[in-house]
Image (cartoon, rainbow, N blue to C red; front, side, top):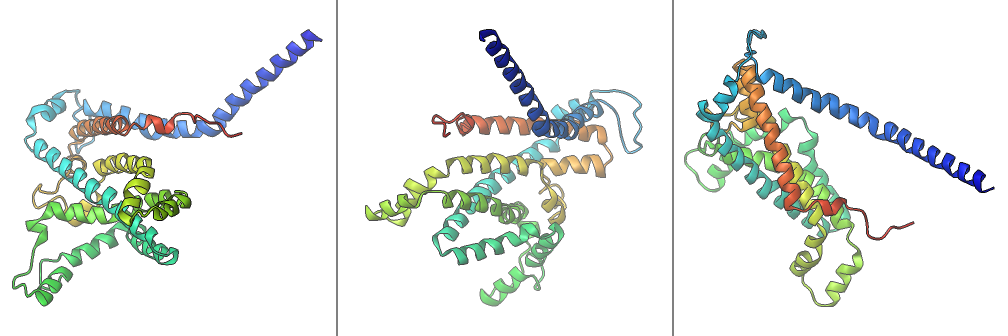
Length: 315
């Protein structure tokens, strides 16, 4: 009987082992294949192209390291582009994607559910709308003539004599605001969900103890939003690093290179100038920067604690 039990246990362990492997293939296999096909393979192709003289003719005549020499010292505009990218990412992230998204979540959860849900739905309309339509509205708002919405308000209500031209005088602020307004919607939804998940009795107990609205937000709401804030910060930082769609539609990177962020600079070098090899080298550095930002965010926000095993297992 002892030997039969041992054989039975071995069979059960073998079946469990095979079941784990089959489940791994079924559930994670497609994700791994997609990651390899759409991330790893393109990165390898990008590395290979960056060492060639691939240009508008789409012919490779020689292998070279000139593109990397140009990145490290031959491109005088690259420093200004990197500085602008830092200002754009930090400004949009800090002012809108995190802070303003958090403010919207706090406001819409402090009023009744119907009004809050309606307000969030209205705020989500730009994100659900085509990018061209969203930017078309911004072009109308900041139109430098007297027919622009902003200039109509300033000239009618405040008596401004000459119309403002924000596309020329404040292009960086304009791309930060236009991207921030639509980027805050994601933080608003994530933060709202997290606030709704806070136990109600904590708020009731705080009010019984005499805590005001600001004290409740500071001592109850914000500590409960630590992980959502960490996630939104890292995710939106990476998203802003590689996105340039709204900037291209609104300012086309101008005037001159005044609103050309790093991702848009890669696009202009590769697809407008036909310097595909140099664009591939720049893209490789963008990948490295993205990985560095993700690792720094992971370390700074201590995201490892978020993914650790629970101390108490609920059966």
